[in-house]
Amino acid sequence: FLCTLTKFTCSTMGKMISFSSALTFLLLCYQERESSLTLAFSHPSSLTSKRILGTATTATASTNTPLRSQPTRKKHDSRLWNEFRSNDVMEGKASPMIVNGDGHSPKISDGKKTDETAASQADSSSMDPSQTSSLLAQESSVSPDSNKDFIDPTNNAKSNKPPFPIVLWRFTRPHTLIGSAIAIPSIFLLASPTYSSFFTLSSLQSLAYAVFPSLLMNLYITGLNQITDVEIDKINKPELVIAKGDLGKGTAIGIVLVALLASLIMSVTHPLYSTAGLQVALWGSFLLGTMYSLPPFRMKRHPLLAAFCIVAVRGTIINAGFYSHALSSAFGKSMGVMNCLKNDWKCSLSSLFFGVFGIVIALMKDVPDAHGDRIFNIKSFTVRVGQTKVFRTMKNLLTILFGVFGAALMQWAFMAPNLFVGARRGLVGCLCWLAGWSTRKEAKGVDAEDSVEVYDYYM
Image (cartoon, rainbow, N blue to C red; front, side):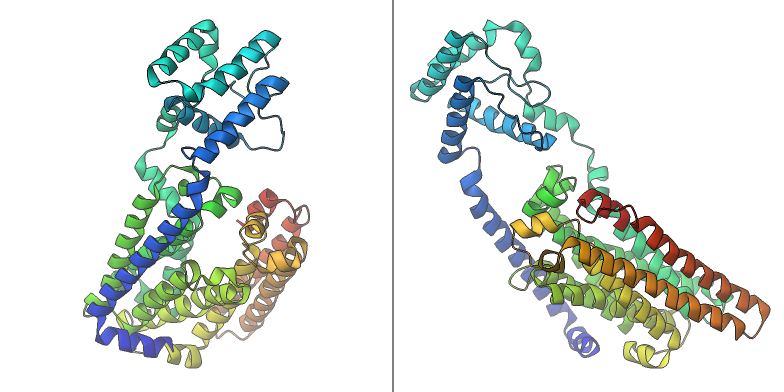
């Protein structure tokens, strides 16, 4: 299907690039509009939010209770509260509030001051801007020392915001970039008939032409997933740059669109290196990556479809596509993607190994995200079955995968034509067994219900 689709798209590639880019842009705009409508009712400038915050502030002052007393709240909650309060103060809807460094409001010990504070906050909405400004000046001059504890969230956010290159690097999800940068040269080495043929100029040029657009496509897919999952990431992965507020959604959309266009254009413009295998790898990844994240498809909501996307990209499309590209552009042996899968045992076995490995990735990555997925109605296998079951099953599957391939490599080591080849196969087989043993050993102390521990193990 992918080969047929690639032949069709390559025949009208210019139109397809324009159409796919326009479609992606429209879907992103739809997602942006949907998110804006959802957040409109919770924005701090809305009247409902201000009434709720004003009521909570008055009740807190009258009951002499710290504003943020729950120990389970995360640190960024206090910063969010300061932002809400600063918006209300600037618009004259509430009086400033002194917030300590730990995110709590100080207790008020004087009952008279408590009543006066509540009264001033209740009447502040009826004052004109000049009266509000004078009241703010009087309140700020009551306790000069208290100004040391006041946090300006706007200035604080600007001063703590990292430089754009660092933000962009974090936006790419570096572990995925590093994985792609290692996988493609490895596939080229697997496809090369000899080691010396890999280190020729034509081979290295073909490799570079494959790596660069694939990294751009990787940026598009991971970036698109972050753009569409901002609200979920605020719960599951608050350290991501969009969820954290270090990168605006509009800037992120621009970055992924530029990466997408550059990647697709490179797949069709070079007379020698724009092979059918490269086109299958890039266009197949584009189609499935888009359908995984964007509505109306949004396959990640359905566990079987989500697993299919990841297994197809990690197992078949990347391995067979780049294997075919390496043979056609670097080693002078023209072979289609399907022929590589059916007739080349090295391509078939690598696709099988990483297909199973893709299943582990598809299911294991959802284990630490179970809380946010439940809130946003993402029916992953983890949500349906439970974190412990999925974690144990994937650990056992990965251990079996390493064990089986290690045993096969050890058997091939005894069937090798010479000692050097047998030693290489035996070494890789031992490394597979070592990886399987490490998989089980490292999982012993992991609590499947603890998202941090699972994420550290998974990474």
